[in-house]
Length: 439
Image 1: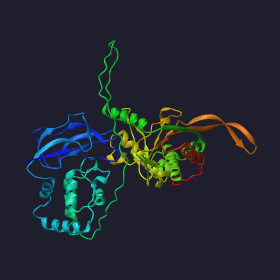
Image 2: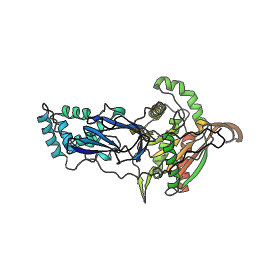
Image 3: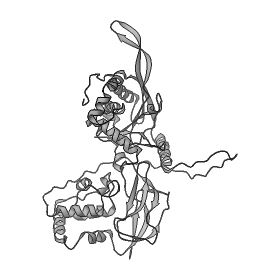
Image 4: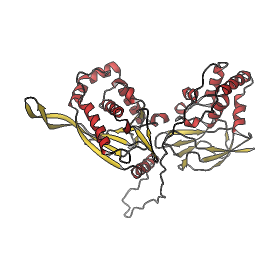
């Protein structure tokens, strides 16, 4: 008999801890390899932890609602196997396909000169799946391309075994060796021990924060303690955008099947400005600056329970207005319905939040670590303004809004922070009233 330590797996960039929300297996229960043992949650999404081995659960080292760090042992499973590799090998070698699989494995071992580091992926793979992939010479690129049948698209043991079976004697495919990219260190939030307050007069209602609110609270405090926040504000005339949207929104929805809000127009301008000022698209790791290759825009979204989540639009600078509208609507809908996947909240390089949704004129948002900037969009208002013409100045009614830019003064000075938000404003004010949908 052997004792196997079930650890909390890596769940993506910047995710350092998770809360246990439910134990699906209790002490004494039998567990099959790749069977889900418990459910966990971060401030981003919910997930599940499967077992790497078959055996019997003999210890639960944490209780429900406990916070666990990535890499910590959360349970002990008693097995008959001496190692994880032996267990994986026993599962893989089926009597019928043994010869074909062995041949495929030998060829894969010859092709792959450098071992694959599956921890480089932002996607979640169970330890058993990763061990099978290593045994069979499956590259990280291949593993990430598989369509999983588990919860939220998770690749299961059956998925990878079917892939190996179908791959058969195909030995000509090249194996890509991924490069290891340094990632920013995650923020460790020290949580003080709390004592439940007591109502003195008995008339006050005491409500404990839910799990997500506790995590958000910790991250917000940690961000303020980490970054030197400073703000720049600028007022923007968006009259042309308001007129254009009113003119085309019905035709846009009819032709594209998507509602046209202001958000994709603003996100498109932010993506263009980030291309102009790449040093706003960075992260800080100690004394080093990581200049991001991709422009991935985080979009702060409000949940029905009042909490916030930040899904990410990947490669936002490569999308036209129609593509941006689809991405914004899709992520917004899935955020409200609780259907976001772990990958949907990973990899953001800059964040935009729309405080104008709630009527705020402007705000001073807190930076989403490890990014260095966040832009708040204020409410659009009709205001009297001076209009300059060749014939002279006059007063007219214009549609205006404030942009509030918070940035990390450790690495972004006022010249860069102010120039960036000014460029966003210039793109918005130069919006073409005759613009086509696809521009």
